[in-house]
Length: 77
Image 1 (cartoon, rainbow, N blue to C red):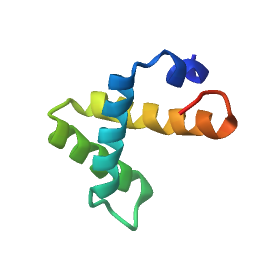
Image 2: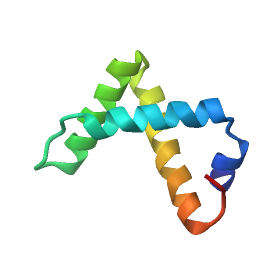
Image 3: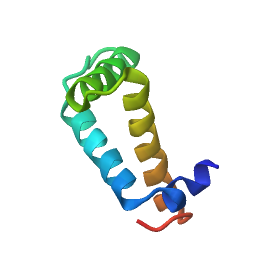
Image 4: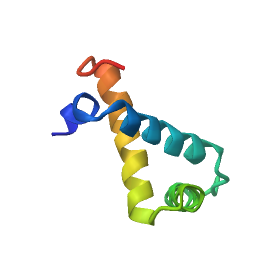
């Protein structure tokens, strides 16, 4: 199923993943603690997009998996 993530998703969903990942990248995290860094960044995405933490985490995770699958050649951008 993860291999199909970029095939099944509509362009609107992919745009939302990109927007969430953009917020994730601009968020200030903890540079000394990797787990806390990711947690703080995901919380920031949730606040900015007015989502629950779980929804924000899923959007970031889906974007990262989609990019991995593009690199592997399993899906088209």
